[in-house]
Image (cartoon, rainbow, N blue to C red):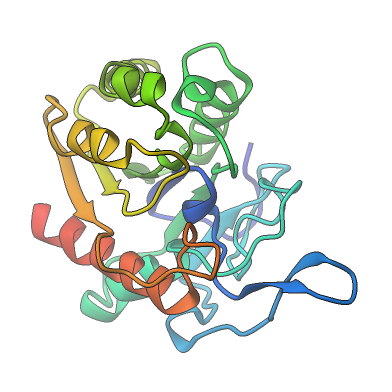
Length: 246
C-alpha cells in the first residue's frame, strides 16, 4: 500500500506495450550492439512534486524519465507519453491537483497477454488497487497504447473482441464500469495487417472511450517506435483530449 507524505489526487493508469513504456531517445550502440537511452529529457518531461509515480514496491515517488524502467525492466526504456501528458494537464489547469501515474506497460506484449488472469492483467489490477488506497484520490482514466504486436493476420482479426473483453474485465474488477479510457490508435505495427488493428480500435463499441490517433507521428529508424518528439506530442494529445472529455 502506498505510504509516506507524497500522495496524489488524480490517478492515471499507463498500460500497453513499448510506445507507452517509452522508447524516445533509444539508439543502438554500435560498439556493444546494445540499446541505450540518450538521457535527454525534454522540457515537457521535467519532474515536479505535482507528478508522482507508483514505484515497483507500491510507494509514491516523484516521477521522472524513464518512467517505466522498473516495470518494463527487460527492455531499455526512454521517453514516453506519461510525463508530457501530466505536464500538459498541469500547464492548462494548474489547480488540477497532484497527479499519480501508475506505470504498467511492457514492450512486445500482444493483447492476449493482457487478458484476465494473466501476469500483466493481475499486475495492472493489483497496482491500480494499491494506487487508489490514499484518501481523497481516484482513478481518472486508463491510458492504453498497444496493438503493434497484433498486426499479424489471425491476431488482427481477433483484436477487437480481445480488446473489448480486456476493457470490460478491467472496469469490472476495478468496480468502475465507466472508467474513462484514452485509446491510442496505432500508426505502426509488426505485420501486414496494421489497418485491421486500427479499424478495430477506431470502431470499438464501448462507452467512455476516447480515440487519440498516432498517425503522422515520427518514428525511430526501426519504423515502429515513437521518437522523443512524437512521444511528447502523443502525450500532449492525450492530455488535450482527456480535458475535452471532462
